[in-house]
Length: 313
Image (tube, rainbow, N blue to C red; front, side):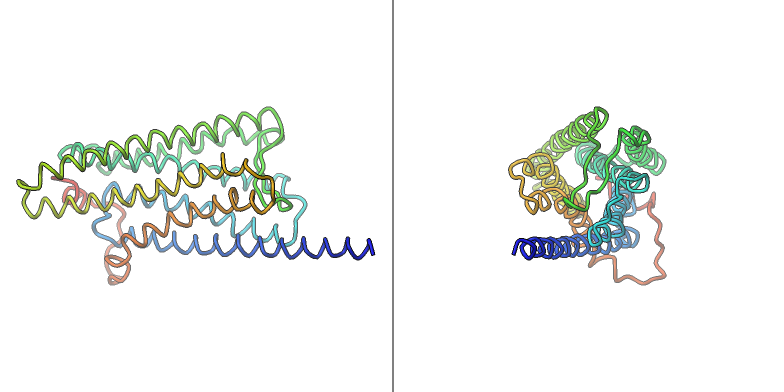
């Protein structure tokens, strides 16, 4: 009887692993599709051929990278319960995932900064976010992300790897693991969110003030451009809320219960869902205007003419 009970536990565990794998795959695959569509949307939409569009495209690449790791590595290792995910290859994939995650964090920050400056300094933002400077900003985003993963090259003590038994990513249980978990991951994510939220709140305040002032004095063209900027800002805010959802779950909600499914849903799934919805937001906001355009339409990521047109007041 005890043997049968033990066998039943194993069967249930296998079923749960399959369920978890299905959830991981569906979210990661859907997210890859959404972000692939988002990238195409950004390339095809004429109103996104500016600094904001370039930043969104970089952000989309980072989202896709995170979700691809989940789809190609996390899903199969969960199904087969692969025991060697903490070997070098698994640690490298963890390092790559952290790279993409931090790129997403800094992308959120610079997108919020772009919206703030566009609303506050509409006549100067074209020069502040011209083609060359936008390239430097994107380079800065990825350089900061690379800086975060430098400690992970000491893979014996500093690493993050996927654990298929608990269905979660785990940091090394070492002093270095504690440092990268606490300072380069937790504190930096929270700091970015605080600055980003402050910028968004300031932008919202400026929009309200401008709306009151321009209601009687602005012409129809100015109001049309303002509506475009408001839509961009709304998109940025929604993505910021999604970012907050992920950070709040990953660093607080997950600590409230030790149940495996609870931890799984508030850490692994919250992480996936964040990047999945990020891409979906871009598609929802811009799909109708751009995705169905002719294939012969130019797909440059940045147009100086459109940047001037969309950003001047």
